[in-house]
Every structure is written in structure tokens, then in C-alpha cells.
Length: 419
Image (cartoon, rainbow, N blue to C red; front, side):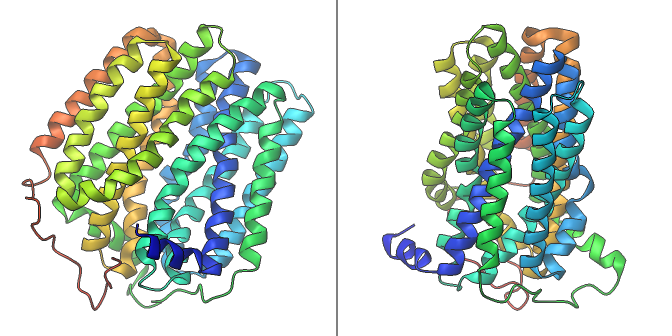
């Protein structure tokens, strides 16, 4: 992003307010997200219960992606964002009470609050994409969406590290910070000006069209279809690796904040990856970047499953995050080019139903796999699984596009190019 574009986007008051508030709430959410399994493990000593709570915060990704996409395409997005932040604030406040009052066996109550936060996040994230578009000009979109892509890596770094550190000090403190982050976002949303209403209220002729248009947009494009499926499976692998890391680091007797530092390294890698993603996606096709990234993940997982050295784990997990950001940018650019804009929310929701929903299944499966087979056998299986996915992606999803070869775009009458 050039200096001129950066200055232009930071001169947009509404975008700065939207981005700052939303990024702050994401930091709080990621801090709480790492705290949920840590708290259940500390309270019960059960990896399976920790997996269930992780599943609860990710389950909405299985249930609500397409409904959230419909809301993003057809509802006033500021009202949706405010409603989501209010729901998240209520859930975080309830979690503070559960932990602060020292209720016995808190796993069920925490699973409920985690589910509410996860639901709010699904609706929030898809509406945020449209809200960013609503407050910026066409010329500002490249800079705006670059910052939008940086939100999650930043939240991963700050949220995970501070969440684990606060948990080590006071178990309820991460949830207080989570609630405060929602309050900040509500304050910024309340003063943003502009029109956040849906641009096209007549794009689908029936309820069936509302539900299926997004699925059809993903399913009919070979690369989107295959990459969505493989991304879901690779997300399951990564989710199991996260719990494996928590267990292995916990078994070494290191302080709790070590877990936050290691897992937060993915966010550092994500920020670093955002600097090279534009250059890679300009030079190589989305297919080439995607396939190479899967092999990169496979290589990085080997030392992760073999070592308990925090330095090694930080370096490799940082690499995992960097590769993940490159993948996200490549897939996002491809989606924006081939999917009509009025269907984008539902199409991204349909893809997220698979990719993010797999995170929920991975969180649930992780506890049982690690309980049954231990960290060594499970870790070896994860490396093999990622290698199989990389090989599969190499042979599926259509021919590799040469650098400089044009990608078919959606009709400009229906989908203005976002830059």
C-alpha cells in the first residue's frame, strides 16, 4: 500500500472509527477465545471438555454462515454490527460472573457464553466486509481492504498473548477485557455517519434463491470448490495442532503466558505475510500460491509436532500464520474477481460454512484424538494429513494459471471491480 493511499484512507473518519472499534473488539474476542479452553482445563483437567468449549465458540460457523451472508447482503449493516456487539458484551459479562463467582463445574455455562460470542462473530464478520465498502470510496478500497485483512493477525498477536497473560494473573480478567472491547466498538459504531443500507434488495427472486445463490457461486467455479473443501480439512488439522500445543507446553511446566506467546506468533506471521502477499499474488496465480502454501504448512508442522522448545515453536507457528495470510489474500482476491458483488456476502458465507465450520469440528475432534492417542501419535498423523491435502490440491482444482494470465471477472455491471 503506497504512502498516498495510506494517508487517504486514514483521512476517512468513518473508516478509521469502524476499523479501530472492530479491531479492538476482535482483540478482546481472541483473548477470551484462548481463555475458554485454558479455564476449562484448569478447572476440570479434561482435554475433552476443553474441546467441547472450543467447539461451542466455533459451532456457529457451522450453523449461521449462510443466514449471516443473507443479512450482510440485505440488511442495514450498522444495525447488524451494533446488535452483534451488544450480544457479545452480554456474553462476556455473563462469563465474568461465572468465573468471578467461582461456580463449580463451569464448563456448561462457559460453553453457552462461548456459543453466543461465536454467533455474534459470524454475523459481525460478514457484515463488516460490506460496511467497509459502505464508508470508503472506490479509490480508497485497496487501502481499506488491506487494513481489513490485517485485523485478524493483529487480534491474534495481541489478543492471545494478553489473554493468556491476564488469565495467569486473574482468571476472570480476560473476560473483563473482552467486555470492555465490545464497549469500545459500540462507542465507535454509534458515531459513524453514512449509508449502511443494502445496495440491492431485489437480487434474489425467492427464498430458495437467497439460500442457494452463494452456494452456487462457489460450487460452479472449480478452483473455489476444491480450495474450499481442502481449506476446511486443513483448518481441522490446524485446530487440532492448537490444542496439541497447549497440552505439550502445559506438560513442560512453563508459565501460562508461554502458550499465549507461542500461539500469538501466528499473528506476527500474519502481519508479516500481509507485506509479501500482494507481491506474491501479483506474480503468481491464486492456484499456484494456494498449492505452494499447503506444502509450506506441511514442512512447518514437522518441528511443531516434534519439539517443545518455545523458540522453535514460535518460529514455526509464526510461519504458519504468515502462510495463512498469504492464502487468505489470494483466495479473497480470486473471490472478489469471479463472484458478483451483490452475491458476495452469501458466497463468502457459503465458503465459510465449510472452512470455518471445520474449525468447530476440529476443536471437538482434537480433545478426543489427543485423549485417545496422545500428542506424539496425533502429531505424526497431522503431518501426514496435511501432506495428503497438499498433494491433493496439486492435482485438483483446474490447471495452474501462468503469471500475468488474466482471471475471468464477474460482469462489471453486476460487480464493480474492487481494485
